[in-house]
Amino acid sequence: MKTILLATDGSPSAELATHQAIELAGATGRPLRVVTVWNTPIPLGYGYAAVPLPVELAKLEREHATEVAARAVATAAASGLKATSEVREGVAAEEICAAATECAATIVVLGAHGWGAVKRFLFGSVSTRVMHEAPCPVLVVRADDSVVETRDHELLRAAP
Image (tube, rainbow, N blue to C red; front, side):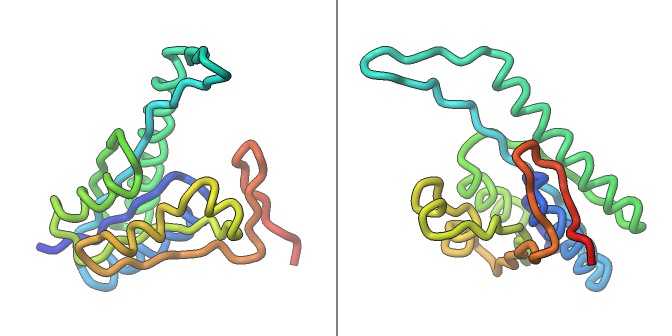
C-alpha cells in the first residue's frame, strides 16, 4: 500500500507538517512513515588547519534525530494512528527522496523554515530540493506567523 512519508527535523514548521501528515494518513487510511536525517558535522577549518570536532557531536546529532522520529510516532499514536520511523544519515534532501522511493510514497510531507533569499542561498533549501527531486507529490507546510523559533529551538506562541 502506498505510504505517506513525513520528513521531520523537529522544527516548528516540521511539527505543523507532522499534524498535516497525521491528518492525511487518518483521512486516507494510508500508512504513515516518519523519516529523520542527521548529518555528520563537517570539521571547521581555518586556513590550512582543520579543527576536529568532538566525536560526541555526531552521536548527539544521531540521538536528536532518533528523538525527533520517536516524538512524531508518539504524536501519531496519540491521534490513534500507527506510524513507523526511520533515522538516516546523509544529505537530508537526498535521503528523503531515497526513502520516498523505497517505501513507494504517495506523498512526502515536510516543513519549510520560511527563510528569506539570503539564508536560502547560504544554507540551501531542503524542501525546494525535495520538491524538484522526489518521485511523488510533495506537500510543504510553512509555519504561520504565530510560531517563532528561538535559538535554542523552543517554541513560543504569540499571544492572541
